[in-house]
Length: 194
Length: 194
DNA sequence: CGAATCATTGAGGAATTTCAAGTGGTGTGG
DNA sequence: CCACACCACTTGAAATTCCTCAATGATTCG
Image (cartoon, rainbow over all chains, first blue to last red; front, side, top):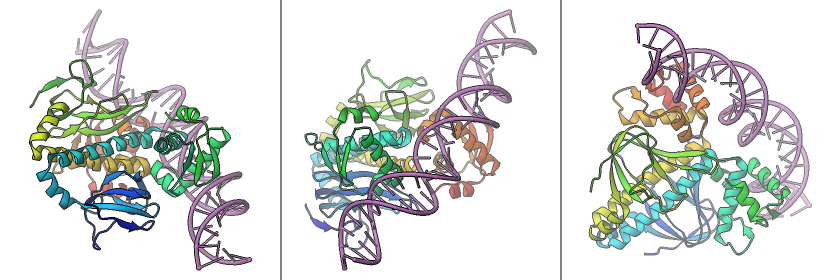
């Protein structure tokens, strides 16, 4: 079932040279799923961390694709294989339903973020989301670039950067370096998030 | 399986007085699914038309809810019922997976719209989406208010209104009245959509 | 060390929102 | 049937947020 594959950053998810549809589980590293417009504008729908399972629908051109944010190992399952399994195993079919439902719920939260939240609220939401991954430690490692964050939050890299320094000035976070953020005041972040 | 229910506009989807999780099929009328922030900001994730089936996860407060845009009849299926059915019937489980996947794909398109498209592109996308419903007739009936459109597209009602009149000036559409739009130049709309 | 890439900062500008006023259609009561 | 009120929609002007462009600083990698 597992077909681990070493990924290098920004390498497209392909299989045998052509696009296929499949589900994937992140063994190590971080993956982003996104769509791109003809003129290059990009929207990242989600980041996936070790332990996460995510689905891709790459049947036609206008669908999502996935890229590695860091070097990572991925377990791949071809959709055709899943099709066969779901015919035999009800639990498997239900698991896929649950997976899609979780992704859908996350997407709907993100619709709210992109459609209705301000820049500060978006960045605060993002930090809270990252911080929830390891809630005990306030020092959060940021695996993705500012460009990735911007394309996830529907902002420019400059606005992301400015907002982060503003949050630092306000005492909500600390920025030891650009890939590490200390959430030293989660209450303040919660307040800034809508 | 069908439990048709007459809805009046803006009535919340409830069942027996408390929120439950279920799937629903639109028999007649139009439904919107959305989330709301504490301060009232609203994001509509999708509109559902007759024949559409949609899923709701209303288990806790921060999830989506549905409202009727027009008077409508809805077929409801409790999620607990679906749980039972999916245990017995593999095809049913796969159908639910497909449903969630379709909604997810739509949500991802909408993430791109909200995160990266301009006001004109958003309105053009919206009109194209509405127009695709009955591609033979260019006269599209708009069942939802400007407020609904704005909360769907992440804009204000003023921007929606201004953009529509601009599209009319540019000859892309005609506005006989505010609830009817003639897509007299779909090519122009396609060009404006990214 | 130097080049290249990524991140930060600043100034100016553009797109959208906000606030405010005006228009149009609809329903109700006189 | 008309007057009025009400609501949704439209339009305009000012304000704001975020983006664009440009320069500087930091980090990585050969």
